[in-house]
Image (cartoon, rainbow, N blue to C red; front, side, top):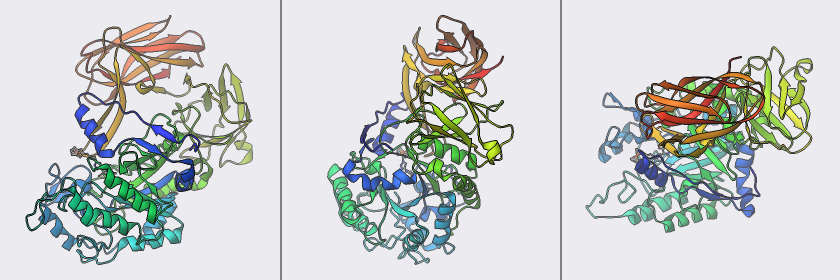
Length: 590
Ligand code: H79
């Protein structure tokens, strides 16, 4: 990450039907303003080198695992007591602690998993919104040592294991929300003896003291990960950040502390960004769908998907923190371990691709994959192998010194590079021993310079997001929605089309000929879409739509010569207000 550019403001534009909801969400997640002063750069070392971390959601809710009184609840497990999940009354929830006995918890095994996965630090829930402390707290008996038969302090064990394995340790702490302590955000408004209390009561009697505890009882910690600041008054956040600074001067504070008082930007939950932003930015994501353990949740990200998301985050200039949800017995779901370890084997083969690398000069993904950078070395990570083994780089202006396939024997590793009309072509060998994600190391004569135009690649399908379009006569807005409860998806879409409205991209076509055009969109009923090449062909077609984003073919379009074109999409008939375009795709036909 570029330490010289330290001030970052991300503007959020919100979707309309979900306007109020999205707005609430962003209030919950806190202002997206973050700064890391050059003088504080020391604290950023973790992110600079790290890029990849383990997040752990583990608590009383893990014992429930989204199965409560014989009924399954679908969504993020740590929210199980919420009225929109099982709606568990406070006393009933608290009583569950008596059954919580994670006797199989093995801190060393978890630290080893993080290490094998190639992760550099671990951030674990010290207290989530449910208010249950997963460490020995002296200010609240509602903690794992005092309230459960387990009686051990797992954070002590984890701190020791992290130290042993050379990993950083950080704590997640829900500073605003506390659903079981009087005065906590979204918590009870009265004390046990019936007194009306507000946030101050919770803050002074629990939150502040617990932040003191987690920053003093476990040795040096790398990060304090505050979440969902909501309506917490600024003075409290200032004080909490002050406590972290005092006790752990080297620790980072997450962007979700609120009021721009954190050290960096944390994107929305599960948000892998498509565009580069300067500054320090973190994506948090999970290996399956829920954060905390959910018994049914078996939709695991494959090792290749994990690597894709990791490389995308690093390639956009950010870091990636990937979550696991250990079970109520303390063990990590087997398939989470398996997929993380497999992805970790790849990282061990090519550590130079991930650690200490920086954003791609293209500022977005390329059709076949993504790029990370170290000085004048580019690492081209191939996620979709071009059919003919020809890897194209659009608009690279810096001269190439050499290209080499990593992990290959010398004879197969040296690659031929040609340049033509602004394109760089790298010929890959017919057989490559790396089976998950092959990497080409490209040495340039100097720092990479790139013409940011969109190349249309004939060897692999090219997707260009509506997020990158120049838009007139339509709205380009962020939409966030939940798939299952609490599982967020994000898209920048173009919708609310007016007559004559356009989403336009400048593209560079390497190979002239016919390309099949598909559009990914959602909307209502049938829609007529038009695709135009400025000064060239117009095609249009009617297709159905669904409420989910789905890809539909529009037809073949001709680019008569190689070179630059302006391509635009317009919505011609149907419910123009609802028609919501996410991406355009080009596939070479002949
Ligand atoms: O710890 C994980 C989540 O539990 C936590 N952040 C990650 C890392 C998180 N807490 N809150 N949120 C994420 C936002 C959730 C908002 C919602 Fe709702 C919960 C939307 C619907 C239910 C609160 C209640 C906002 C609207 C209604």
